[in-house]
Length: 329
Image (cartoon, rainbow, N blue to C red; front, side):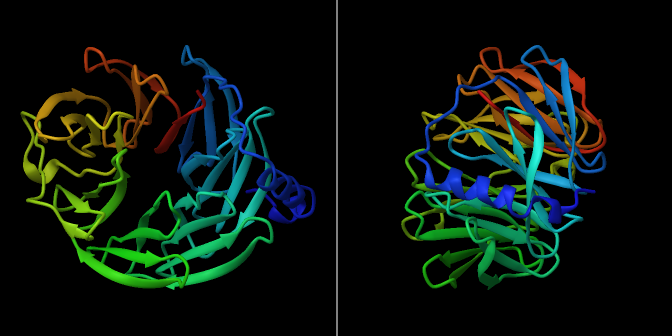
């Protein structure tokens, strides 16, 4: 467990300075970062998948995001009610930002002055001012909020409620929920297509993907269900997703179906089912989009997918219950 009090002062000054500076992107290290829920650490691998370091964090690290400059990595730690901050150059935790109960997923405002956090245990979307470290909005949601996405203009945020089976649309200026969109059972995560016209939502327990038209906040068409050969529909529990920069392909981790499906984003046809590890959870693409990395929660490893062949090439053990994977490239 990290003592957050030791970071107040120096850590807050570091974040305030970083927020005030232009977002100059640091040269990527190529390192792969994996949060492990039951290992209480972020595991760092190099480009050859060799272990670089295990970084001890607060308890139950889950969602992770770099800042725009990619010199800091933020990690939501659900059992210590904190977002830890890792210095990418030193691979050390340099700060810990207090949150509400059980932070799960978060997103930055476009100017990176605010973090929007889904606090699972008190059914709130919390907005935290990064400079003052003060909660400036506390927005009620349905029970067990998870996925969070802030639109590029910063005016709207979306958050899923696992128990209410809804996507809440939030006006970030007023902090008010302006619409509730009923989707499938236990909605989890979002991706936004590069043209910002579609918001894809994974619904874990109904095995569905819903697509929301961001212009109208209405559901487009029928939900999508992808079932690999040899599995039943109830085995399909989609969670993490990724989309290519040109918007042509979407990758969806299918949870207990132990596959990632790669689909044509426009026709929704299956391009490939890729067998990975057990309970494929989150997925991220390398910056050149030649590889995808999948965190497998029940086999305690990550799988690398070659995007040219759309086949898995290797799986590497990382630690207990990997949750998220991000690449510094």
